[in-house]
Length: 89
Image 1 (cartoon, rainbow, N blue to C red):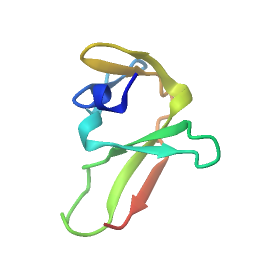
Image 2 (image 1 turned 180 degrees about the horizontal axis):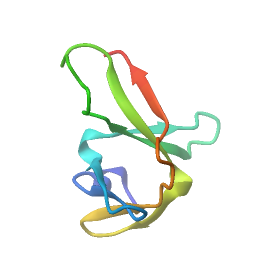
Image 3 (image 1 turned 60 degrees about the horizontal axis):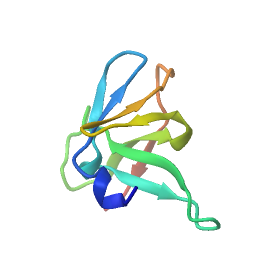
């Protein structure tokens, strides 16, 4: 599947039915050694006070991706508190 085909798909957690975001707003974490996708980085807009400061992301390991459909990506993330990262723009 081409990366362009992922754009616009909604990310839904199979465990709790929660919507985490849309791939178009997300980034991919790529392993530089082998070129494989390591994780999806989905923006975490909760508790976001400033639009121009560091951005918070939820890191979803690629191994949690269960199905890529026409309209959505189904993941299975059982953690109550998923791994969050901060990146400066």
